[in-house]
Amino acid sequence: MGKHNVMIGTNVGELNTRQRGDFQTPELLARQVWALVNATDYDLIIEPTFGAGSFLATTPEGSDSAILGWEIHQEYYARTLARFAGRARMQLVHGDIFAVTGDDLPIATNTAALVIGNPPWVTSAEQGVLGGRNTGPKRNMKALAGLDALTGKANFDIAEAIILHLLTVLAECRTVDFVLLTKFTVARNLLRFLGPLPQIGDFSFRRIDTQHHFGAAVEAGVLRFRVGPAPLTRSQCAMHDAIDGPCTRLLRLESGRFIYDDEVYRRNAFLEAEGPATYVWRQGLKHDLRDIFELSERDDALYNRRGERVDIEPEVLCQLYKSSDLFKGQSSRFVIPVYQRDLQDTLAQVASRWPKLWDYLESHAADFRGRKSSIYQKRPIFSLFGIGAYTHQHFKVAVGSLYSEPIFQLLEPAPRRAVIDDTCYSLNTDERAEAIYLLAILRLASTRDFLLAISTAGDKRRFSKDVLSRLYLPPYAHCPAALARVLVEEWDTERQFSEYAQQSLVEWLRYQRELRIPSARMAQQPVLF
Ligand SMILES: C[S@@+](CC[C@H](N)C(=O)[O-])C[C@H]1O[C@@H](n2cnc3c(N)ncnc32)[C@H](O)[C@@H]1O
Image 1 (cartoon, rainbow, N blue to C red):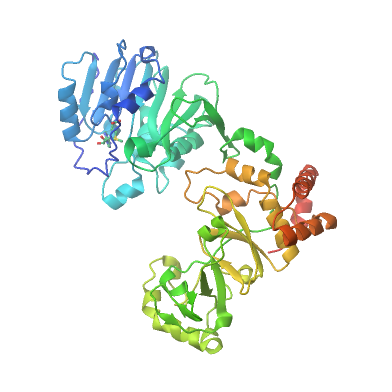
Image 2 (image 1 turned 60 degrees about the horizontal axis):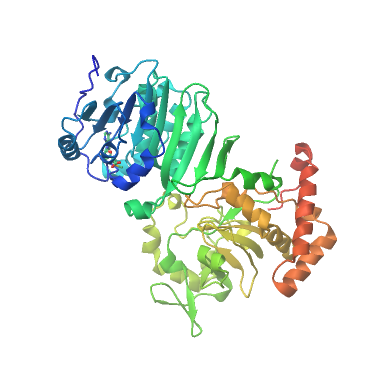
């Protein structure tokens, strides 16, 4: 390692297991990661956070590259150092990887470097809560365009910061291959910010079974990418469903948005909305008091979730649908009082219109005052959110956002008006035929494929407003009357749409889309909701 001094400072303070994002890699998995590279191709191998040393222990035989490793935790460092004592060309450091600079490393303009390992699995926000400071010196990351935006974010993963830090530290090298176990969100953020840079590319992500290897249910895998002259692919990532399996789909970044399965997307791209939307997806009711608001009917009486009997005016009640009801296609299990017009409503009329409801709300005023979210501050005490004129419309086509399949349901007033909770989104109308028309589009196999191709199971709220709003939904008024009639007839008799009707709908949608209505004309069309 010659003149280079790698013994950097060890003033790292004491971080606990969670602050260090400590998930030690089983050696079997480390071996599988090593199998993805040819270790003899590199002059220098870096394990930025070696922990108990799984990657060091499984370095393939025959590699005579220099190996450098860092570990912040004294106990791991001491144990791993003892394990590899006397190993030629290996240098292990007790220290903070963020304190390393290019001057500390044996690198030159012809160095081929490999960064391999498993950086911490913890976000800066989690660390904030845990009281740790492990985010690295931001000044070092500013060398690369676009990185400010990433590191300036309120919340980012420590693994992202470590990778970005190493990018600047290793900037002198001829090539650097990164082969690291990371969460999928880390890979996606890096692709977003590094993808546009000309010298970075050849991204791949190989999914691993985290439950099996780490006992944690996280979408994670082996992220690989290359920094160097002329990468073969850029702004895309080859996705593998298994570490040793073939590439099954291409993740691509287009105009700043992700496409998670390029082939499926291309087949259904006619469903991508362009221009201003005719229909607005609305999130459901938010109240943060399920014990008080979710009422069940038993023996002609109403009970809240605390088991208290509730006596309120029946005309203020709506059927409440939750994500699970929509996903399973089941009837609503609760009713809910909906007494607010919209976000401007001062609730001044509630006491006189529904005195029994008012008594019920008043008797739980302490619960309302205890609602933590800041949205309720400076609002009338019994305020609801996610409410507007749309909430009171008669027909809704709704989907639960938290599931991995987009299952759309038509909600009709039966007998009461239907509302959804804040884990769901809906399109709303007072016209039944229009609701059936929207349901028919939303239940097409092409719609399902399109929504799955532009979203990912790794996201908690997979079918978010952003995702749903990308779907092309031409105004009902444009739908040929004969087609609209068939859809209603089929729904009324079969509760489903025939192959023929679905095909006609797809052809019509393709045709509408190909007309490529100029944006100016689109803008003149009325926004219905
Ligand atoms: C996910 S574990 C993986 C450990 C090891 N690479 C493996 O694959 O088994 C992350 C490791 O990073 C270490 N670590 C956390 N922050 C660090 C930092 N700033 N510098 C060096 N090591 C750090 C933790 O102590 C922990 O051992």
